[in-house]
Amino acid sequence: MKNEVIFEKLGIQKITIPLPFRLDHVHCFLVKGATGYTLIDTGLHDEQAKKIWQEKLLGKDVEKIILTHLHPDHTGYAGVLQKQTNAPVYMSEIDAKAMQTIWQEEAIPLLQRDYHTFAVPEQMTEKIIQLIRKTTNIVEPTPTVQQFLRDGETINIGDYTYDIIATPGHAEGLVCLYEPETKVLLSTDHVLPKITPNIAYWFYGEKNPLLSYKTSLEKIKKLDISYVIPSHGEPFEDVYTRIDEIWAHHEERIEKTYDAMKNGITVFDMCDILFPYELSVYDYQFAIGEAVAHMEYVRHEGRCERTIESGVYIYQSLT
Image (cartoon, rainbow, N blue to C red; front, side, top):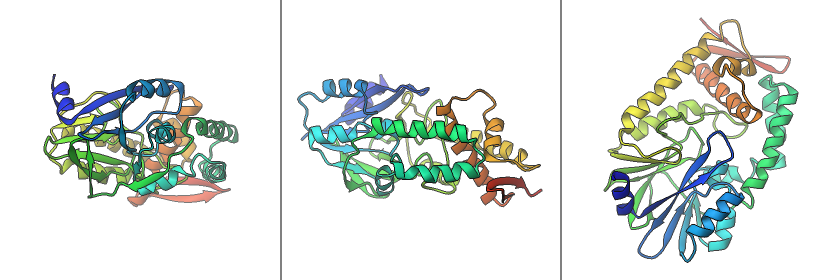
């Protein structure tokens, strides 16, 4: 019942779009205002998203499209919807720029360079590259971003004004949206109710994303929040307890990472420590990135050193 009251007050309609991954859905949002609708995130460019949006947008005037961050499940269908609605697209400048290159052929050598230093086997690297090349099909055409979402500024969504809050970590340019009157946070992928967001180093972007994520969590804890609407999972209330749970998970991973460095270890071998179960090729790209994020966090703490042997990084604890 509380869901219905809050959603109705803010004019929010939750649009759940299936995903063909282990994480099998993404929530996008259609927000009604006095003069039209705001669309928040889009799903992939695939037949399921196409069918759902055709139904949900029929006869509606879309005033703006907001993209909370660059990941395909949030932006993939944005280019199509922009052409169909002629609505301006809003996004952080960091992610708008990255979105133009990361799934293009020019990005492949950068990934190959990093994966070599991470000791990723060539066969695995090639399989991940094949996945990245296929990603192009679910993210194109990329939208043209006309307005940048900037930390500390506000944006009108429906009949309410939301604070734009930059929360890097899961993606460098990820933004949350906070409505102070109702104390509602649209947390996108920054804080999720049941799973921990993937915090990973990629061949582009932040060098210490886990530290950025920690800082972003602390930033959210300073807000007066009574209700959270995430992009995966169901809305929830106690964001402060959930933030503590998420960071406790990462602290445990950080110590596990540190302990595994005593005799020196590569990134790829660390994946087996942090993820001691069978991984698909799709899972490995996230596991590699998350292993690097935790190893680099420990290195920036000054608790390990990173050397290079035959072009491969070796991380070893200092005590």
